[in-house]
Image 1 (spheres, rainbow, N blue to C red):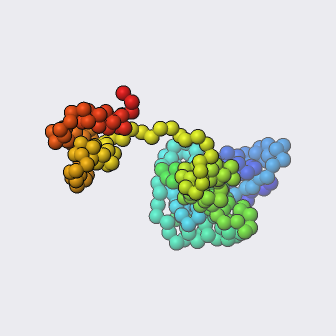
Image 2 (image 1 turned 180 degrees about the vertical axis):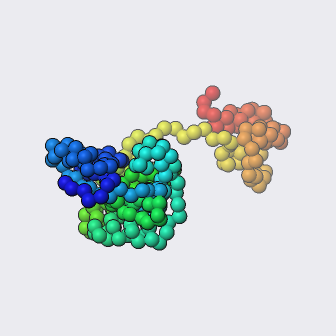
Image 3 (image 1 turned 30 degrees about the horizontal axis):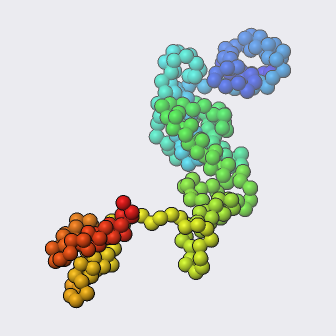
Amino acid sequence: LTANKFPCVVKVGHAHGGLGKMKVENNQDFQEVASVVALTGSYCVVEPLVDTRCDLHVQKIGTSYKAFVRKSISGNWKANIGSAILEQVPMTERYKQWVDAVSELFGGLDICAVEAIQGKDGREYITEANDSAMQLLGETQEEDRRLIAELVLQRMQQYCRPPGTAPPKLTPQVAPLSSVPHCQRGRRRRDRASSVPQSVGGPPSGPPPGPPPQPRGPMPTDPQRLQRGSSGAGNPPPPPQRPQGGPASLFRRESQSSEKSEDPDDTMRNLRKTFAGIFGDM
């Protein structure tokens, strides 16, 4: 472990967030740090110290590109340690080329980021490149998480679905008739068959269902029979009229026939027969 120029920066391991980085001012401090690093057995690199003005963070999530600038306000030589000001800056073509080159270098990464520092002389130095383990910064972290989730689901549908299967449809569909169980189909057919009336071909197999309901009005033949009985054999019966009502019209016709009849006994006998035919035996 050697250093050609001081001050320098010693980076131990693959830590991030400012961890494992030490600033060495002279050769004596450098030897002490080298003795400690020798006991760790970890990866170590020595880099010249750049008097930085700010840090740069360029990220790519699918087709979304963003760039951030971070400036330290606590006086620490590491901008990601202590207090700092973070702001999003416009995405330039230079930054886009950086992150696209890293993506193509590792096989076309959909999610990656580039970390860089800008010196006080205006020069920019790329310090590291990250894949999906990159850090989300700024007020757009929730939007970035949503973009990552949508991108992961899209790639899963594209690469993890078995070949020959169609993508799932989110719209609900009505089940076809073929999906109804056979037992339910048979039950529906039986219900439909029971609701169809029987044909009038042969005699009924069982006893009659019961006496028919009482009619609301007189039978058409009853007033004619009543009029024939009350008018006698010599007088022709009046033309039949269609009944217009219930028992009230029957009473009016009976009263009219009783006025035309000369024998009250025959009239009463006919009335009893008529009532017996309509309402049954009293």
